[in-house]
Length: 200
Image (cartoon, rainbow, N blue to C red; front, side):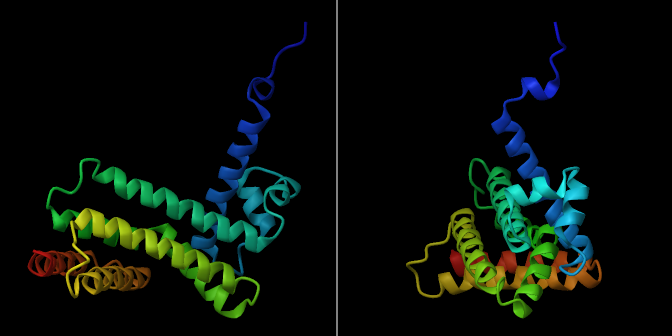
């Protein structure tokens, strides 16, 4: 009787899903560390521990791989943000502002930034990244409104929430060059106070 391998016990669909997720995580890590120019399908496949052929089976082009990777991790981050406040934020706007700013200071934002820069020069990539960013932006805005308890039927509230997200993105950009956590903490505290006044 032949030995049953682990691979035999794991259904093919599950192995395929696991391979895809390893490729997506590796693509984001490569993009964050090496930028667009240094992130090839071969480099990502090696980091994920799969063959280049397996990578191309899941993602036929480099553009497919990297836009899917950033989208995948963006969805994971949205889920993580919701999970921070499973019962709602209970009026703790400081905690919500801190969590939103954290979205823009991690490896996902760094990877997304490399993708934006590449898209500004790559005609094939630009429409995909533009559409992806619009979708991610809408979802982040929706989550922010929900967590802040913001009533967007009131004049100026939508713009106030969008201003918060723009500010968070700016702090994320500043963080790429230097870790300025004390200054960031003061800005977060000020924004939380402003939101309490603006949103009621």
